Structure formats: structure tokens, C-alpha cells
Length: 257
Image (cartoon, rainbow, N blue to C red; front, side, top):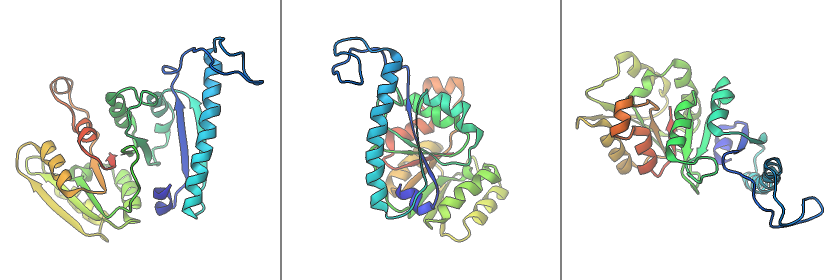
């Protein structure tokens, strides 16, 4: 909510009830609206019960959060039975002009494993911002991104620049001396962030991913940008990709591009 206030954007809160998670269980309570205690709930009854309780909890939470803002925000709430990855592939990718905000928690409700979280972020064709559980919003003053950001399409670069410029942070750009971006990409980034202070850091260790994450720990940026590049099949069998390592090691919001 605080981020939406800073960016002056609309918010849609999406809660997906994964049918793989909820199964028929025995009801532990009874009232005039439900079947008798001790009887078996059907799948549909469980889903509807979940929707009811989630909607109630979300209403209470969102009312508290919006009242703290003292700022008018257009808010939409969606609760549905679906799988998050399926939702991304079939619906969210139709319009990738939204910033997809995801809780990093692997709680066996939305995400059953970290690999599922990684795959969801990689499958979203827009920018996903993955936030640690219980993270307290703070105004963005310091951003770290790889120079590979300059290889994105102009449209995607502009989308990111639009919300970064509203917070006016210092931009720190890290470049691998063995995989330099071309001059056009560098000029493009400098043009995008012309109004901001931009620092360049060149890495020479030969292991860009490790040095990038080590530098992030030292710098402690408010947002860490990580490329969603999928490792090859063989590479994925012997080592973790940068995105997965970032989720494990970084305690700050991660913008996956």
C-alpha cells in the first residue's frame, strides 16, 4: 500500500486458493450455515469456506492499511481457486504493464517450494517484485542493478524507470568485465536515469553472480534487480541460478526483470 501511494497507482490484491493444497477434511464446527460437525466437507464446500474466511481477513487487513495511508487508493480484491503459475501464464501475461508484487514466503499455500516461486517469476513476462515476509516498507533511496538491464526492450526499461524516478534513488549499476553491454545499452540507461545519481561498479573476479550478491550484502540496497535468465538444462542440474541464490541470500525486495 505504501508503495502504491508513492507511485500513485491502482492496486489489485490477488489471493489464489490452490486446489492442490485443500482437500476434503472433517468439519470441526457447525452452525446454521454449514453441515453438521463431524461430517465430510466436499471440495467445493472447502473452497467456498476458504474464500469466505480469506475475504473476511483481507477486508480487515486492507481496511487497517488504507486507514493508515490517509491517501485515496483505488483498490480491487480478487479471491479465486487457481494455481499461481497457471494464473500468470494464462491471464497475467496478457498485460504485463503491472508490477507483480509477490511475497517470498514458501508456505505451502501459494508456493509449495522455492523452485515454484522461481518458475513463477521467470514465467511472468513483466517485472515481478519479490518481497521478504514481514518486510516494512521504506522509501527507495538506493538501487542495485546489473548492466544487463540495458539489454531489455525500450518499453520494459521505460516501465521500470517510470516508477524508480518517482522515488529518486541513487542507481548503482554493476557490470561484468567479461560480458560488457554494448555502448548503446549504456547510453540508454544513462538517458533513462538522467535525473538521478548513477554509479558504476565493474567486477573482475570471473564469477559475476557471486560477486554481485556479495556486493549487494555490502551495499544493502532498498531494491536488488536480478535478471530472470533461465540457466541451461545441464547448468541447472549442477548449480543454482542467480535468481534462486538471490532469494536465499538477499533480505531486501528483489525486482526480477
